[in-house]
Image 1 (cartoon, rainbow, N blue to C red):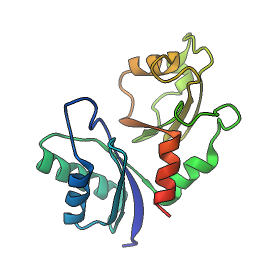
Image 2 (image 1 turned 30 degrees about the horizontal axis):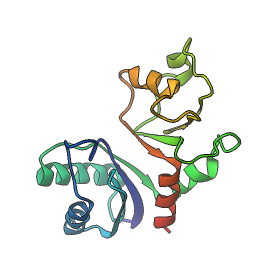
Image 3 (image 1 turned 180 degrees about the vertical axis):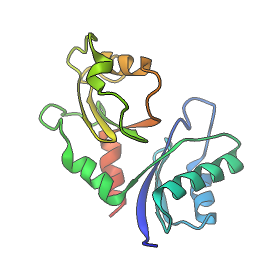
Image 4 (image 1 turned 135 degrees about the vertical axis):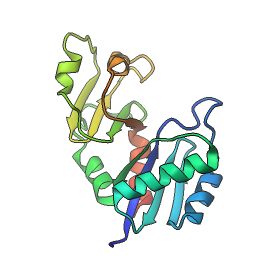
Length: 179
């Protein structure tokens, strides 16, 4: 088995008071589980680590360890070092997105079942822009995420793949941590 470095995105932790996980406790857990060079970024479930497992096995093992230790299920989405570096290199909205806090990447567990254009048909998106590339959606919300018509519309779509959102600043910091 080839050793790999991975970004681990945990969905839905530390939002409000529920589902709290201290990053120090998370680092300890993952180190105890046998992963190396475990690091976290911010309090929103961003982890980098080295592992000797295939991604599908790794995601399941981390989900099980977190549920056992912290008592609630957490979705895990993984990207290898090379995959995350490609996300940053691709940057299809570089020509318009000039604020990393208003530019996000939606990491999908699998590609969309239907073209996003079908889901957004008839929606008024204002100045928001998006691009889909396989298992990533790049979204530029110049008016901010909270007031984004695109993010509001995406939030109403049901039945899509599991996903988690990270802003561009965070994605770039994670790539730097993985070097």
